Length: 280
Image (cartoon, one colour):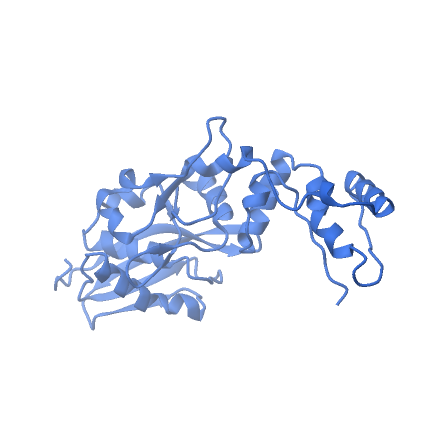
């Protein structure tokens, strides 16, 4: 099949696209047919998805597989949903490998694939991992993501980690599991958070009392004063006295920060998100 067989073959791989902080299910349909060799991607996609053609081709060859000398048509269904991002690289490659019988077709039965491919076959992380895992829980129970992802949380047991496209030769059983602590929480969740400490502030009693009241009551606070008075020093230490996140709040914050592409390690430890906008 990877050589010159012109018989039509079609396969489907489950993936998703982000809309806000929600992941919407997308079916990646891959069809092989006779004609001029190449990859054609259709289905209301943006230019970043169109660029996947070159990344997928190079990644498949670099991982030791063979790119078929056939016409490859990729349809991202449903066609009326706008798709964006580079997360479709991995599911497109998986569809091609299944269609050419280079990997076990059963790997796509109950798994959602997500990840950007490097030209050497590596699977790179993308934003929104938490949203993809939540969707996988509802649809198929398993998500396949990059092992460099920052996903941390109770859903980690539903994640298989892949670092290179070549690992698919062994099927999903050969992929690693997301690390978890013995209590069912992320290993980071039980790690003490050590950063700028509020106890390091000397004097500034009135300002410290105001911050404690604002933190305990979850109020907003406006800091006014001349340069060097200590406003920035105090603001940077504010997260250390905020109430810890509940499990529900932590899951929501992880989802929002993951989709936004922001670091989530502190949130995974239960540290409440804090925003300190500058006056400019």
